Length: 155
Image (cartoon, rainbow, N blue to C red; front, side):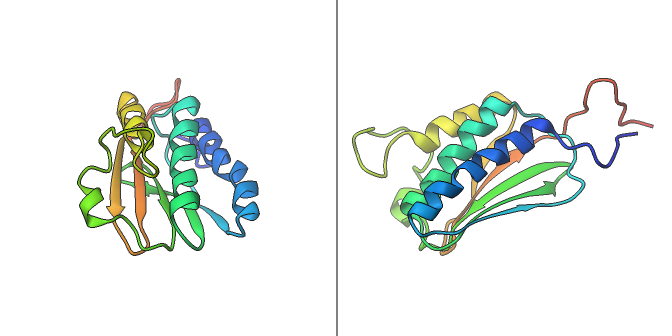
């Protein structure tokens, strides 16, 4: 049986990246909220991938969004969903369809950040989606459930 107090280290380390963005949020007079649902299941993830994905998502929300940025980890479909949301107007409908396509890296706001982090997410079996285009846009990282070594989740 999996101990309820055990949380995936990689998820917590990834969320720590959001905490590091706090100083940047303060410098921009923005608020960063972290919401972590108790009892999250173990998720298949690596610290390096989560750090990079959350760094890009939180940075994008601070750079291009408005109001409070919220990073929330919750149970979803047996795995873990990490939502990054802000209070801005959201994705331009003309841009939304290509939000995860690589673009000219010199174009402001239309670089390759989302495309790269989606590729990183997929490399560990996760998915990156625009759960809510806006207003109040939400980008969600969906991490599949994982069993830690030495634990059995079956009965």
